[in-house]
Image (cartoon, helix red, strand yellow):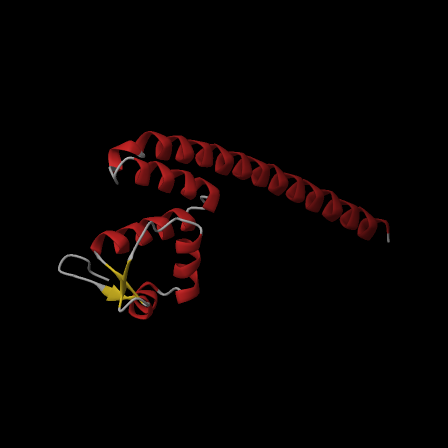
Length: 135
C-alpha cells in the first residue's frame, strides 16, 4: 500500500490492504497504540497517511516479536512528545537491543539442543550397530 499520495482511507480498505482484520486495527486503537483518528459522519473510521505509517510501524515491530507492551511504551512516548519520532529512537534502540539479546539466547539454546540431539542419535546408532555385530 503506497502512502505517498493518500489522503485518507476507511478501516475496511486499510485492513484489506495490510492483510489484517478490522478487529486488529480497532484493538490497537482501544489499547492506545494508534493514537486518535478521524471519524467520518461520527462513526466511520478514517485513516490518514500518518495513521497508516504508524500502523505499518506497529505491524513491523510485531513481526519482529516486539511485545504489545513494548510497542505501547513507544506509542506513549511518541504521543506525549507531539509525535516526534526522534523522541522514541532511544527507547526503540533499547527495546531492539533487548530483543536481539533474547533472540541470541534462544539461538544458543537451540544450538545446544541440536548438539544434544545429534549426540543422542550417534549413541543410539552406535548401540544399534553394536547389537547388530553381536548377532
